[in-house]
Length: 516
Image 1 (tube, rainbow, N blue to C red):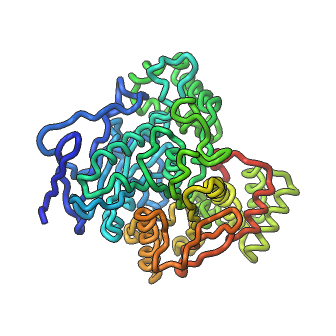
Image 2: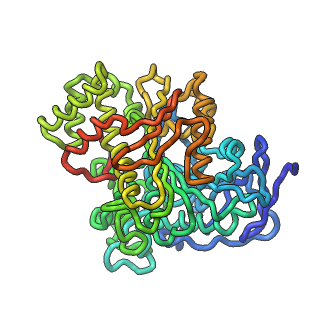
Image 3: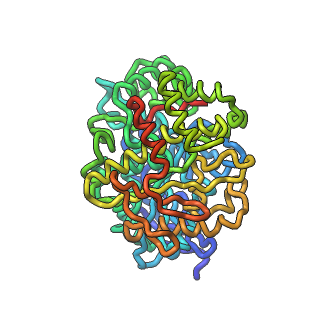
């Protein structure tokens, strides 16, 4: 085996390295840098090179605010090497040969504001090795650099600025189509998958005509906002506020191109703070890239034949509550106040809802009831709604899951928080040991999760010989695979809570999560 695998791409030759028997190529440019005169524009072609280019180090991540990570979630962090030459991707392959393996393209989380495909836990080596797949992780433009809504009468060159970050992902998938064969992958068997904001990006790509044909299966993990994107008016207001913050005429994007990225990030953060945490620098219905919400009022017809695997963790909200451990010691009065304020409901509605959850979780402390209610409202019901809409199309099947394994960290108060499944999907529980611990159930559960995700990428069906028979989800039967030390297929898990939540006034998916 050569110590330095070399492949030929459409832009030139790349030199990678072997890591634990997997060929790894990092920091591959799939489009040109986005600084200066290319800022806010659709992605432009990368410049070809001569000779052999080293692909041995991760490339820059998109400019973004610094968000400190709780120690036990440090495995989600990436090196703070921000730069507008961030349109890069990484490839992990068992061998750069002609084997035509399934391809799994991962879109990172962090809403649409932060994150990168470079986090330690996203190293695709273990997943590629165990499942004999090619794993790709992607960086792209975020926050205002990827989602600054163009205003009426804006210079037409910037007409796509509101969804530039999503257009980056389309170009990344085009790169996969054109080049992944050189890495041992099959361009006709591509799965896109992502968690949180990455899951939202998957849902949005399913509704984008420009992405049609570039992927063949989809996995949405814990999306809270991907089924209902920003309305133009809200995004346009945030853009105008940004121009006011930096004292420039509204719509003068050319002037913004000349400002330091740090100044723009600071102005954006001021706008978000002024709007009480509401972040409207997100994908928008602009009449061009997006003409409708991805899964509202129904699933996108152009993806009717794309099999979907979708789900959430059991207590998503504890990830956010962990920023302050006093959140796990709330009085009943304080928890009640937060639930009522977050859901914007009256006393009678709050009391009726809480009584249902208390009956289903007898003896649970107030903080735990809060976590279940917020998790269901912000995440679980959103994903169930997406599964319902997709299943009602009658096209490709939908498979639903709930990740219920509980972390031992902080004496178990986190239960099954947002991001909990990521180390298991990538086979990197050791990387996240501060969160996962070292229990005997870890490796067997990790193998089951990886095999399910891998089989879905191969066939569009996650069934394996290590899991109970996994039936497709329908609105009538609601079969859901519950992942835990002992996995089981459950029909409509926690159905009473789902029905109680659905009796509340309609809510707008994708609004800011602000319940602390």
